[in-house]
Image (cartoon, rainbow, N blue to C red):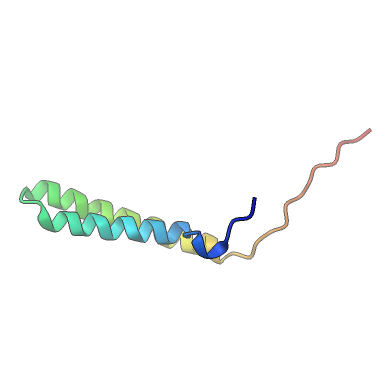
Length: 70
């Protein structure tokens, strides 16, 4: 099966999208505690995005195959 790279979304992009969605939803909340919780979630997603970006920036390693001894 061939997967086209342009259709793949990086994990960091997914986290950023979730963070933005949380911020948008928070704007519509009337309850201050619920709004604050959604904004906290957005910050957590932003932090996860930063971590994912660091991981994504690392050079790709070749996988090692274990050799079985005979």
